Amino acid sequence: LLTRERVMQTQGQLEKLGGQTVTLECTFSTGNQYYYLFWYRLERSGAMDFLFRIDENNDEENGAGRRFSAEFRESSKFFSLTIKELEPTDSAMYFCALQEDTVRRLIGSPVQKPTPLAFSP
Image (cartoon, rainbow, N blue to C red):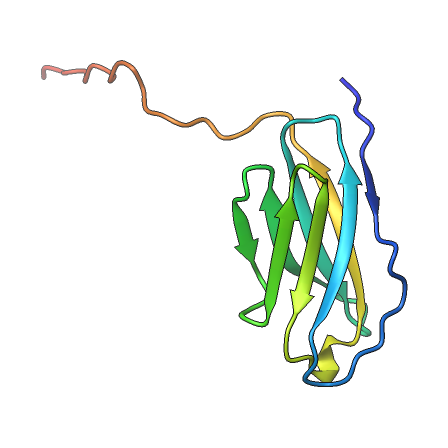
């Protein structure tokens, strides 16, 4: 099953002063019911830093710290990253990414526990 996913960032270059707040916006489309959205930062050194991940159920992982937060609106296919108290090290290229998923976690426990085997000497 092939789906057509798309991620768009339309803001271009943003300029802010230290201490200010900035919000980066991303819109996306996917035909898959299971997916992850990510924010990454490309450092001047070339390193790609993971910042934030969220899935279609709003389960999130913040890899960037307290100054970073994300907003996810599934109904309008909107995902944003807000950075508070900007620092010089925040100057970088930021990327929004979408990963579609075909299988999701299995929740539950076995219906029948295995029977232990007994060996006699």
